[in-house]
Amino acid sequence: MEKVYIMEHPLIQHKISMLRDKNTGTNEFRKLVEEIAVLMGYEAFRDLPTEDVEIETPIETCKTPFISGKKLAVIPVLRAGLGMVNGILTLVPSAKVGHVGLYRDPVTHEPHEYYCKLPESINERINVIVDPMLATGGSAEAAVDYVKKQGGRNIKFMCIIAAPEGLKRLHEAHPDIQIYCGHLDRCLNEHAYICPGLGDAGDRIFGTK
Ligand SMILES: O=P(O)(O)OC[C@H]1O[C@H](OP(=O)(O)OP(=O)(O)O)[C@H](O)[C@@H]1O
Ligand SMILES: O=c1cc[nH]c(=O)[nH]1
Ligand SMILES: [Mg+2]
Image 1: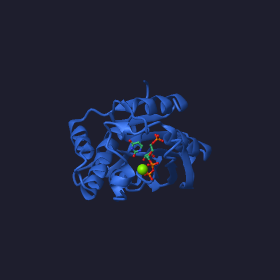
Image 2: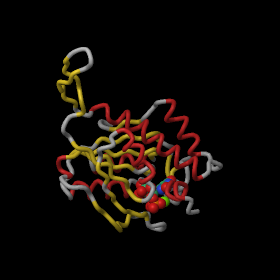
Image 3: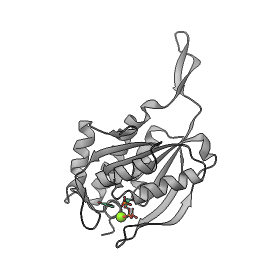
């Protein structure tokens, strides 16, 4: 699938394995999610545009690359996406932060929107939507729909674990966006949870279960 990137880096895989372990507690889980976001961001930002700017080193004047004009927005899908925000801000501290609040109905598995707020001039930004889990793909599709409706054109979606069903759905609904997955898992179960997955990412990040 064009524009779909599955991360193969051993550090990312190692940290995802630690996340999966049911004995990993809230504090460690939260730290790992943030670290994985840094590592995934490093990969996903390979194509950030740069421009040469003249500076003076202590030795001489030279033209050297800086990240160019494009402003970045990191947009977590609440709640679980919040866990990835600081990882992205570690790489690009000047990024603005938007929020897309969605929860998945436990019976129908359909996403419900409850709070959304994006930074200004979303049409001029590189918009990085983050959510650790891509299960049926309903929430990711709705989040991208929303960002596009607000004018967003340049969009990357980043998740830690994807199910094949959700990846297919998101790619088919939004073939223009880049999708980055830490790992592609086997399938969904009858409750639309990812197998083997890591359980409910939001509950594990915030200790709510
Ligand atoms: O691909 P889908 O089938 O839509 O499922 C994935 C969504 O489910 C989880 O959120 P959840 O609804 O549990 O909300 P939470 O982050 O507040 O726990 C997860 O963080 C995604 O947003
Ligand atoms: O496996 C899953 C599916 C949806 N949301 C989660 O947090 N985990
Ligand atoms: Mg949840």
